[in-house]
Amino acid sequence: MDPKRQQDPDYAALARFRHALRKFLVFSEAAAGAAGLTAQQHQVLLAIAGLSQDGALSIGELAEILILRHHSVVELVDRLSKLGLVERMADPADGRRVLVRLSEAGRQKLQTLSETHLKELAAIGPALSALLQAFRG
Image 1 (cartoon, rainbow, N blue to C red):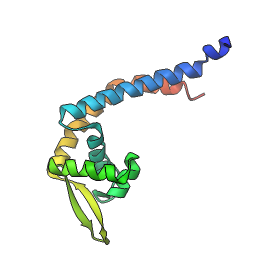
Image 2 (cartoon, rainbow, N blue to C red; image 1 turned 135 degrees about the vertical axis):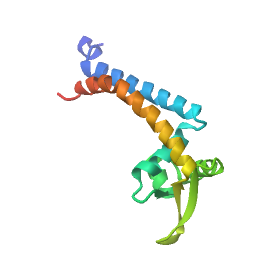
Image 3 (spheres, rainbow, N blue to C red; image 1 turned 60 degrees about the vertical axis):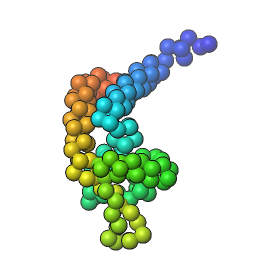
């Protein structure tokens, strides 16, 4: 094996960065679990709150954002609806489309989770920033 290739700094930087991302994802999964949600359910709530123009997204939009199949998102929304965290409504512009929005309970759950995540990001932000510096060359 080529010694230069074995010690390539890009591999080391990528490995450290990927490890840091994975640690954050593990933290996020645990925080969602402690709140009674799966990581994907948390992502649905976050997508609706953060990426919708008017507080609601269609199932198709959620599927695109979450990189999931339509039927998987329907199942996620069904579970979130049973938990009282989201509400379905007909799209006023196209009655054939179903829109999903957060309920008040969903907003409260997301706010609590987001506060926890923002604290964690503030704590690891400097390390992530330093890792990103390795790619700005």
